Length: 164
Image (cartoon, rainbow, N blue to C red):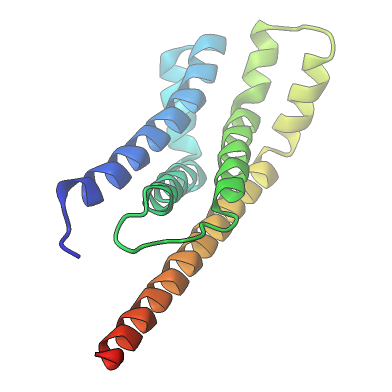
């Protein structure tokens, strides 16, 4: 099967949109609560965990697009990739919110939100590591589905060639 532009463009676009979304959530929350400069400083301070989460979510979005659009191989069943994409996206977003939730409490001291934001801020690194771990798990499962389907397609091609 020849590789067309859509085989490359769709996954790259999905990865870019996913990474931009997560980055916007992270920078947006801190910018609104504090300042854009503080958001950039905090991003740089946490870059060793924030950048892998953003990149992992981008890879996950690209793989999900490959599976859903049936690019490269004729995938018959995408398995749990949709659920994993949802779980990975939710935990990545929660990890980003947890990282900067304590800044929101400075600007929005609403009853109940303060306690939740304090909890998220206290365990922010744990949430970020969990988010990264779920992204990695999702990537591994999606690669497994892709390789399994590729193997099936290859064996079907061999069987049809032997029949001739």
